[in-house]
Image 1 (cartoon, helix red, strand yellow):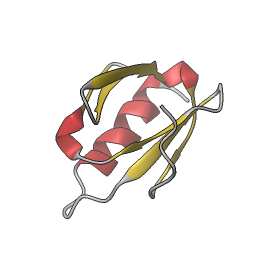
Image 2 (tube, one colour):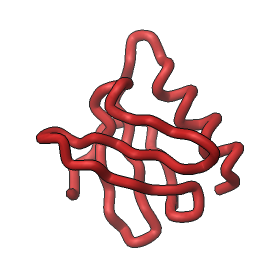
Image 3 (tube, helix red, strand yellow):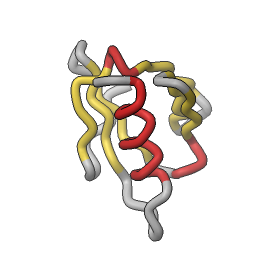
Length: 76
């Protein structure tokens, strides 16, 4: 995924009103569910998601396999 596409897709999902949970799947098979729009910050193809409990998950456009527009089992 390109850095530009990465930013556009995540920004679109984060700005949905009302917000809907979505899932990010990394190349390694790890998945996590984004459950709040203010729990993620992204810029120039890099993002950090603060999972419940404050655990940060850093990822970039090169490590994302797909973004799923719905909830999934959290695998942190």
